[in-house]
Structure formats: structure tokens, C-alpha cells
Length: 95
Image (cartoon, rainbow, N blue to C red; front, side, top):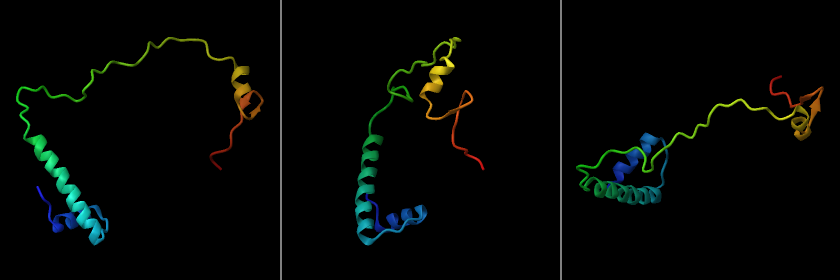
């Protein structure tokens, strides 16, 4: 399906983008090529093919919610760039 120059200008107007004459011609050819690919896909016989949302089987990646001991406070504070009174000191984000 070949798009016309007016089609591309209409799409550009809807997208609120300005295109030069060279860009209009380049995008006309590229968008026409994309539509040709969709036409080829639409021509494929998919009768009897189950719809799928993902090509690979998905498995739940959640792990068991098990309570475990946390890191020792001193080890955590040892990795912090600034500490004060047993807490990590950070730059104020609100004034």
C-alpha cells in the first residue's frame, strides 16, 4: 500500500511535527514499506492457530517470602559514604 505525500503530511500534522520535503519523501517510502509488510502478515493463513500473548512460557519468578536476618548495622554503615549517630546521612531532598 503506497502512501501519498498528502497522507504523510496528514500524519505529520496529527503528530504535530514539521517535515522537510526530503523527509516527507523518505517517510512516505518507509511508511509504505511498513504497510506492505503488514499486508504480507495479514495474508498469512492463521486459521487454527491459538492466540498467544508471549512466545515463551512464563513462570512465576516470585520467591517464598521467608524472614531472614538482615545485615548487621555496622556492616551497612561501613559501606555508606556519610554516617551520623548510627544512621546514613544523605543530602536533603526537600528544603
